[in-house]
Length: 231
Figure 1 (spheres, one colour):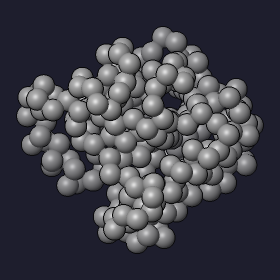
Figure 2 (spheres, one colour):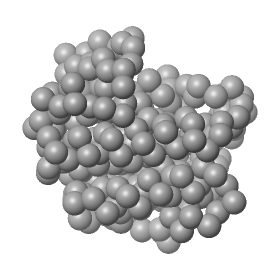
Figure 3 (cartoon, helix red, strand yellow):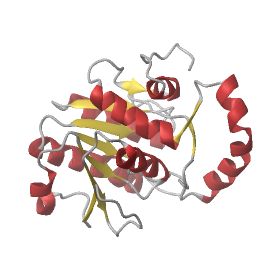
Figure 4 (cartoon, helix red, strand yellow):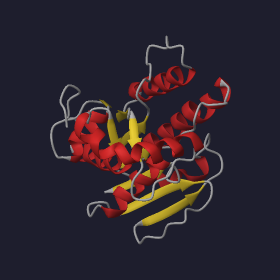
């Protein structure tokens, strides 16, 4: 399996990249980045690319891929809608169209978020933008999964770029083992998200197209996901 990862330098992207590098069935991992990652691995190939609205210059390197784990994103805090839309929507759709052209059978896994609103009625700007992005990905002629994690605990060296989240992770991390037992539908880890992406790629068509924390946790345990089940 050949996988391409966007956002590998971010918290969830770190989990996706690590899951791919550790998985024996993944033969090659391409990471599209603006600056080189401080990671070396025989399976990893980094593609340095500046303009995430135009993938024409690297189109020939996007052929023969089996899956895309799209983890690129930014916090909406302090950003206006145009800026947030450019990164969250425009970059994502540009990548999806380029990949679909080069590798039409590719499975696209998009990291959205709990609370995303595909109806466009939410008062939360970020929820509307992510909802629009999900809708347009779903309308494309490709297999696409929308990952909507709620609380995600970073593990295995993953770190959030947002100072507020880093502080929250330090505090909640101490309670995470208890939270995982008491409310497994609402919490997960970066490791679990990465493994779940690999799982839906392997079992195409057997998982819901929108996956929340409960589904993510079930997939990492090798069970059939379902929103109403507890992990």
